[in-house]
Length: 455
Image 1: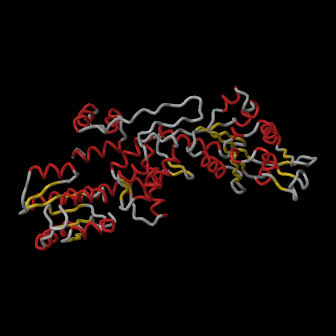
Image 2: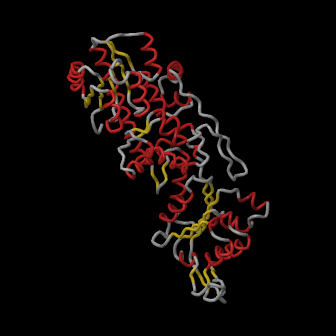
Image 3: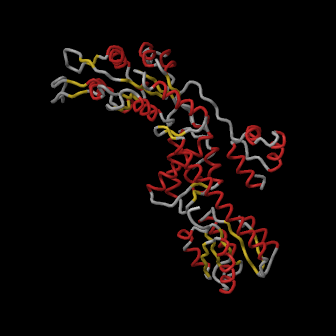
């Protein structure tokens, strides 16, 4: 814990406020109090309480309305209503609005102590989990990529083995999966790491300028060529050229690219002689190039020349166990950028991110977390923050340019107490086996064990 959990007391009776303050401070709470509900509500965004004890009957604002506004402004805050006049109907209404509990004056101090200790432990446990996620995110980072899943660990091992030896490679994967990060890792681990990595997006270059951009031109080669210009291959000489979206390269340019890749010869536009370059070429695409080859949109000889080594990136929906670690890293990044004390997500927000379809993969997840951090007024990203950042979270996965797309299955609902107990019993107490039987991660199982008091 970086600080004590914050208890907010809202009661128009100064004696009650002083009594609760004296009772709560020895329980390791930072206690803030208001005798005016309006004043308390205006300061919610600055206070960011973890628990609030709210009097039901106050002269300026009704306690139920205070509850609504706290839940809307600081969703992670637990709210307990206190009153001298108990009512079953009011208690039911309070629970429906999200109240944690309902206490009657004069207080049962044993119950109040148990309530405060439960909330404090919940906050401490949440902080511990968030810090663990952030620490693991750093631990499982590999040249900007983050992945604890077996498929990503295998990918990292493949890059380590291949990087010192490859001259050409093809990186495939859906949009937003991190293909450029793979190219940077291959460059930094390879023999050309001391030289330049030159990046070109083939889909962003005007077709008539492709040859000049890639191979350069001599002075007077065409109208406007007032000076000689070195192309990207020359700029990358001795280093690495990353050709992103190689499938967008015009057919006429594909033949010239093939010669450079095979023989290391570059001829500027308007030049009479070629010149030698020593360049490692890494190409990337989100398309199925074999389909393009069959449909005569991509040269077969170039495809096989580039595809000496293929590195395929999995979509995020096939590595959902990495979502918490990616999210933790993004939260840390954007909290620092926006100068906000955001330490992580609520359980509800985490579920939303875990279950989203992510057609835009890691790029979409990163953008979503950035928007949520912009929206947040608390130290924890709430379900409302993430829901607003996601927009239509239930939208179907978008089509990709691959010929075959794996259909993501909906994530099953979180198991209830009975299901967890049965799974543990069948697994003989082995939590890994129980988690697999329930179709959840070990981390998700531990969270349910904590919630049910079964840990």
